Length: 453
Image (cartoon, rainbow, N blue to C red; front, side, top):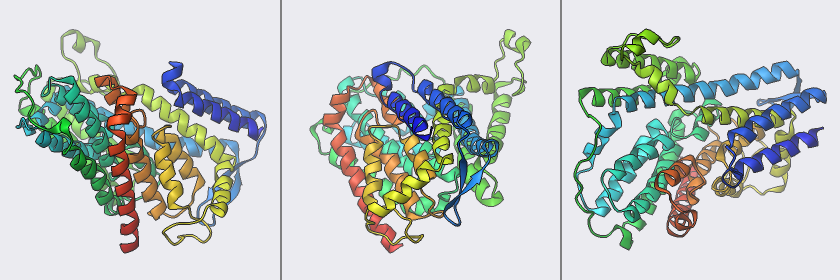
């Protein structure tokens, strides 16, 4: 029966990877393999286990208990993401991101490259790499008319956004998973990954700035922005970004799960949003009379704008991986791999329980081909290294930046592909080698820093 669970997972994973070929949204196989996997465990009366991270061994558990345990851990991530997405949508409701366009005051292609790369690197660390990519490509469209030029800028934005998301606990879904799972802490994540991630962005941008595509100036474009940027736009932009940045501070001070701080931040932002929109409406019920009168709640508008399919996909994939973890499959596989794969570059933090740098780098390359969320979810279930072990930091870096090597390798890449209709092979030929250089430089830098710090 365990073999059947593995087969279901592999088939579901394959369907997720081939999403574009099958024309089936990846949330469908994710939810399907989650439900079928747990059903097989229940019907087969399979023994389930919980990993004792202190003694590094499996301990028997009951199905109901282990299911609630994993559901609770998954819910922490999902509620956190819902809160962050809602705040971002509230900012957008007030056209706050249009205020960022004020930073762009040049026609030089090289200067624009660096402006957009730096903005992508910073914004992705605050509002996540996916949203940062959407915001910046939207602004890019209002500045550059020539599509061929925009494609090059979009490619470098993807690299910079993924690099910026890797060093922040709220910058990428995979890094958030490691942070919420108490595998990394905010300060150490920044300490070990900021410089490697920065180089992962700077080196490709530096190389690209010497390419013919970024020589000369762009044509001056008249301001066609239909959105209204007023004092409320800027206030909500700064308030929303500050509220998200506040979450790691809240966790450090209170030691409460991050989703609690995110809900507090959402409440504060929502209060100001309601005041500024002059609407009185609650989060729990829709006021039809108010809507009929023309007063729309920015909070309701924001909640209707979040990507529910993404939330359901994360639910499915995380709970499907949890099924394999509960059977002890991931833990046993990790032990076998550690016996056969030589350790490179670092001393084991737990005796006989470490993984080579080469394997983690290969994980980064793999994340360009298959979704990095299940990769990281599997690594969390496989390895029991202590909090802030170099393993977790390297996994965060590799999974976060490795996806830039293919346009379909990251959420930022996929959304850029959709917005600008970027051809897979164009990206492979023009941008992938830049992303590879940045990934390798950052990885080597991390290895040296790990030995020095």
